[in-house]
Length: 302
Image (cartoon, rainbow, N blue to C red):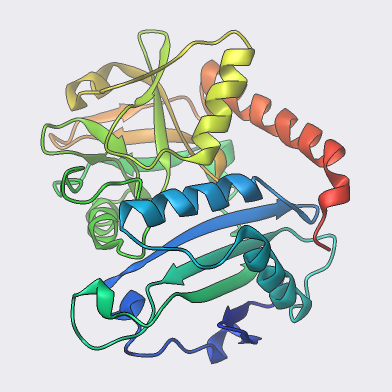
């Protein structure tokens, strides 16, 4: 297992020794943005795409990012050098940029400038039964923030809405949540995108969610395989007619769903390990990764 190591403004140490100043706006207000990428056989997956999404998050909160993609990569490499990672292990890298320290005041203009924080650790080991059987989801009472209040495409440090929704779902016995907006439209899970098969059509929510890079990749893979994916609004009532469900994220990849509990306590059950479309998505994604590793070996960080 990779020793967790952290970086903060040039200081590198084991993670438990890395300290964020109490006046940092990321700590005080969640005034920060971040990205997570992982490696496969030492090769960073979609590094440039993650940095571009970071810049989009920054533009949505009016933050000027003063670290270039190359500077962040150098800082990641320096952090990796202090870890015990080896070529046989996959790593998780989270890099976060806060608006920096300043007085206890909401005015962002009073900040002293960007602060870069990096976390390097092993890729999360998900319960293998989530792939062989499936993850259990539930719709909580709590609603997703309005897109006019806080754009979900801000990948930022304030996750309280998601945390509370996840807590409600777990209290009901589920592993994760499916969040609805104020109009009872499906948005996303706590930190992953969600997909359904409804009426033999693969659908995924159009609005109210972070447009995930794994999601985007899978849409392209499915369409290249002749499968049309419909990105549209999904009303909660439609979920009773869903025949398959799966979730996607950088660390989960494609994960099947075994059950979905609705607000009225109706439970929708799905095939263990995923139905035919879920399995197709899983297989296409895994084959893409085989090709990625074969074609990008020269880009390995270690």
